[in-house]
Length: 83
Image (cartoon, rainbow, N blue to C red; front, top):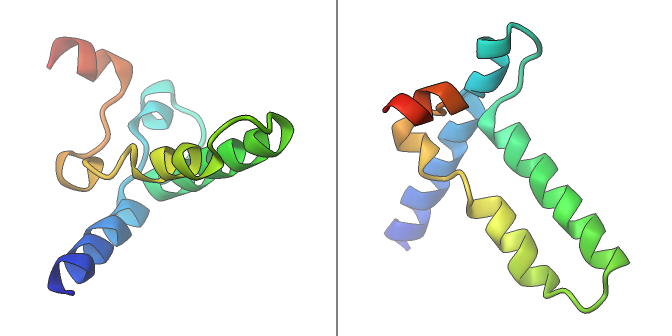
């Protein structure tokens, strides 16, 4: 139970981490949590169109793909290239 609580606390941090790509480009504003939600929703919609897709796996992957950024922060493509 404690591990689940810790995971939920860590995922909640994503709400406070800004996506760095927007700052790098000088336009827009989005948190990592907003990005993850929109990605998951797009996957959900795609699974409704393409019925032979494993929708549970697709949405799960979308929800968890940026969890590490709660610890590392978000890096834009230039930072990723030179880090």
